[in-house]
Length: 176
Image 1 (cartoon, rainbow, N blue to C red):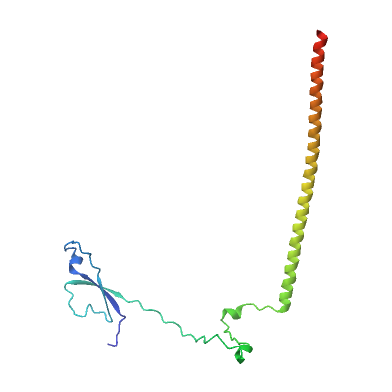
Image 2 (tube, rainbow, N blue to C red; image 1 turned 135 degrees about the vertical axis):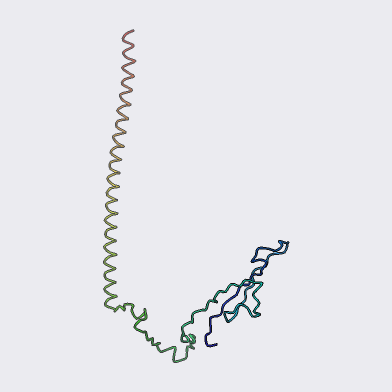
């Protein structure tokens, strides 16, 4: 038994179901019986004349890699381990070892650049708001001008209408 094969599963279908014969009674049809064995033989009793057997290999799980125990994370406050920093050793292939480390000068430069960009953006927003304000003022002036012209024209038309009524009524009297 040096040649061990992976365990296989067997599905046994009764001969009546395999041939499609048999009575259809009120009882439920039974599912094929699944048998498992460690060898590729057909069945343990060796009698395969009345049953069809389907052989399927049993899937095997891949092995899990060995991991070191993480140990306990809870440490009493008074212990020495709580006060000293934990040394971490990273392999060269570890992603954490590949991340960029920034110095205080780099951080200061990044801060200056960010502040300059924010100031530039704020200045652009202020200029934009100032342009919008000036445009609003110009539109208000145009509106006031048009409103005054409209009032003047309404007054002028009203005066013309009154004069027209006077002349039309005055002309009729002279003819009588």
